[in-house]
Length: 168
Image (cartoon, rainbow, N blue to C red):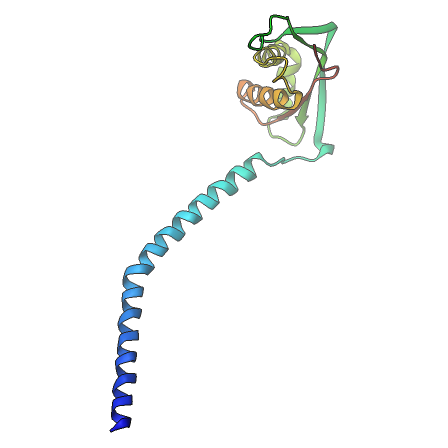
């Protein structure tokens, strides 16, 4: 008799386990798959953004073009709240770095060299949007490069340098 009761308990536990496993497979697994797919999509988008922003050139691939000024360029900055003093940024020249391995390198380089006034204007406009306390050279360079890339519709222009950068 004891063996029959023990067998019945084991059988009931096995059937219960089978039922719970079926519930798990048919109700929880589809939700987990949807969540997993969503996570995969987000991860792939993040990977694309990282891959798109990563430098796709070597330092040896860079060619530079200097935009010289007769005298240092003074650019007026915005005023901070409560600050009545006039502040300005000083730039001696602008050095544009091109990726020589880019498909449109020659066209963009010729265009920039014949009409570098647009780059000067973009840099002046970008610098003038900042105040003396917020004007950080690295931020201004990144923002200016984005605007230049949009203007020339290229990723060939990868960096600019602002030798003689000074905020006063």
